[in-house]
Amino acid sequence: MKNLLYFKKYLFLIGYICIIAFLCFEALKSGADSQNTSNKFQEIIGATPPYQYLDSKIPNFDKVTRKLFGHFLLYSLLGLFSYFTYNSFINKKIIAQSVNLSSGFILSVFTEFLQVFASERGPAFQDVIINFEGFLLTNILILLFIIIFITKNIEKIKLKTIEILLVFGLAILFIFLFIIFAKKINSLLFCNMIFVIATVISIILILIKYFLAYKKSR
Image (cartoon, rainbow, N blue to C red; front, side):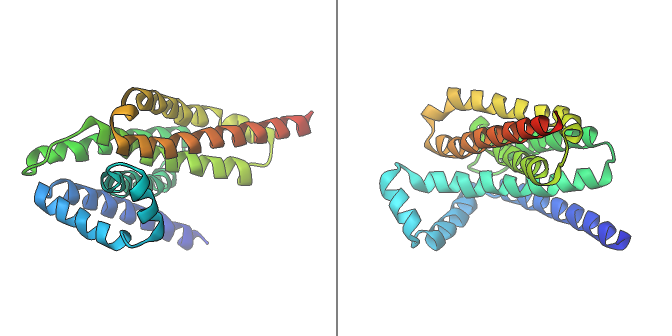
């Protein structure tokens, strides 16, 4: 059992490092190379009925899918590996979660900054928001799963309160940024819609779980 946990810990670490390396590699691509990659991906998903339907309904949907898959979902995957990596190597969960979220934001900024060194490209604050929202969304969903399906009693839920506030405090911050920027950029609006809906549902489910656990303990 210990060998299996040891193996999983380093498997997450290797996956985490590989994703970071891939994101840095993609950030350093020239504008032309990045566009070619995007075009190839568009060709793959462009034939699917959902894409064709949304493409006819949403202006510049090709740009939306570029941000959704190239930023939001990639950073969601990074968030998954980051969460389990830091929680495997750092015993104190509140410290692990703080380092995890801090690293997610730093990487969101850093990979955008790297585009300064790529020809025909440049950093965009809106992309930083999309990157970190993808990262943050995964952390919210993981915490939601833990609280709903794993945590059994009210005492353990109370111990997780600070960790939850950390995540949802950042979620509220990015919802605020959504209000400021989303109306200007279709891709940001689309990714923010996913983020906001998932966050609101998560908050409601956690409150229901907390209420039921509290009622049962009375």
